[in-house]
Image (cartoon, rainbow, N blue to C red; front, top):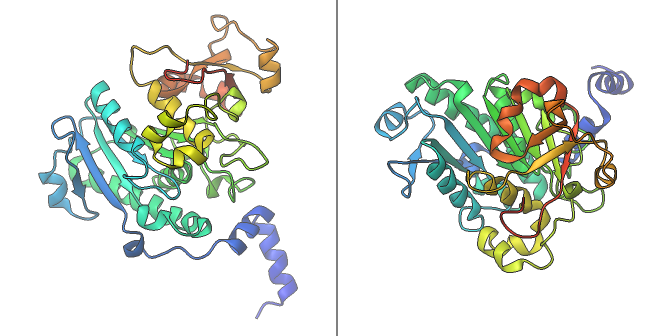
Length: 336
């Protein structure tokens, strides 16, 4: 047996302090059958009735309305959410199907997302791997190209998207993180949270990123990181309670800032709404004082469009990586 002191030294040399702390405080994940992750397919041909696709069911994929020639999008919810408590997932699905001819999957992992937060965190790894397996099934059966895959997740769902991307060797075309969860994730290494290496293009919207009580992370997680209104204290969250409840259920009362990243993204899908433009800057106070580069024509990396159109900045990812983009919004839809 290796002496305790040597074992401890080896651990310190091979893992960060934060990773060790995470391991010490997070329980073992539940079994896949306990989490009971469901993959619900919607298409333009069948937009309102879910088609349940089961892992390993090749015939089920063949008999479904899935079309590998079309872009494929996955919507992944966060903690303490299901389709009833999080109606935003169905709304986002409808917006996407109105805007384009997609395969849209809702990943329902509510069986593992409730209960203690730490247990839900542990389950994110399992759900990420299951999502990667589903994508591999679609690839194997129908020839789906990974470049056509877009994973979008909110809160813990953002990290699930990252874990799925990791399992697919960072080859998925796009990952969108909507206010990735901060508690128990801040300070972890890239392999233990959403990171820009998880996909070919990763864009992130931070809306509840504060050190004191925020549910989102302050840390950069993508090729493009947007911080609307500084990434916290979103306009309208104290007054606009009815719209929040209609979009997000009762959680809209208590987690408005955290959920506002979803609202911002959905507002960008319709081509008729104003575009939200973020400006490259060191911090929000400097942005508000007008101290940021504003000449987008001189350098396209000085500005970037938040939400659905952010993918257009993929060619500039080396210039935007590690930087922050700030913008202000109004209190009400369409926000920009």
